[in-house]
Image (cartoon, rainbow, N blue to C red; front, side, top):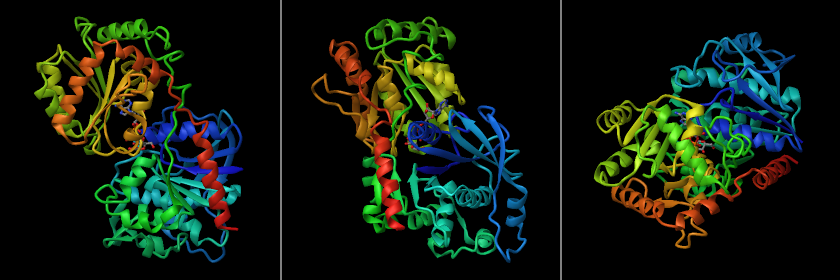
Length: 476
Ligand code: ADP
Ligand code: GLC
């Protein structure tokens, strides 16, 4: 089967969060048995120089009577440049709209850029004559409406990684959707009198998935449907939750080149101690006690991730022996609070503001616990990375976190510590339980259990195969 994915992120070329990791790891697994193509924007600062094959493809379909609108001229000047990534063909959309960007998101005209990109992805699916077209998140959702309206529709799947971002904007900005080459009927985009790409994707795709069964259930109700629960309900059994897998070549304490000392389930204690010692040296806190629990936190500092709940719980439980290393950037208020703690309590708290892939791996390897206080979490990858590194996750009971972490009473089945979202005392109590677990012999069982969990794509890839098959049947 020939599958074309359309996405704004793909590790290691463009990464802002989990979408990049999820797609790179899923396609790696798919490429073992299928022909896999990925369409991506080419931006100014890429995480890696692509391995160009020299082949190029048009980004617009030849059609009769097409008018020379602004969008048409942009697409005519653009092209897809092919690159090879271990057998996966990457198609970088080379356009003046993206070429100069340092970062993929956040420009005020992004709904326009991503409309052009979405059209180009749709065109590429037709040019490559793929069997399945798989779009991810709102950035490429419009291509599903184009696919549906086409006289040559290709079976399509839409994966929602985060319903909180919908690409909505005032309709007056989107008159171009009625013009060439889109020629779209805009009613499926209409949501509260705004133009909403996510909604059009939901209504147009053959099949829809999201990244965990738990999150799927949550999105069918408000507030986690972010206003679109009714559209998802409409799709009934066309909507499925498939838990993400992880890339255990990239995230593996036995072979990770980014960490100070590799280790396995046999020597995790020595391995972690060495990583903790050297991490404390690297961050300029060599005096921190090695026998106190270290809790790692990594992530985008946005509303979703619930860090303010943690900050409050932390202040209430100052008596606990935990040390904290935090890596992330985002909301200014949260950054300020973390900087403040790092300043006034340097013996307890360390904050690194920014994005740092190597430091993320080092924190996973050095930490005893990993905290994710999310208010909602479609899947979450760090709790699974933590398992693999023998780092016990402490998570809120939401979305993919509740599907992957269980606080069983039996230490042989316990895979982490779970608390209620947005609840300071529940989080505080979870921090207390972490201390008890750290100093008990049960910890050895828990670490052994989590390091042996299977979070690979091997089985979950088959769930996507099933969905592709169903999407194909819809068009037969
Ligand atoms: P989301 O996609 O909502 O951000 P995920 O848990 O799915 O959440 O994935 C986040 C990914 O991004 C993880 O691989 C995490 O390690 C990484 N990440 C987030 N913030 C940073 C950062 N500041 N530095 C390095 N990696 C980060
Ligand atoms: C999103 C979600 C995150 C998920 C990731 C990959 O960014 O916020 O929970 O793990 O996508 O699917």
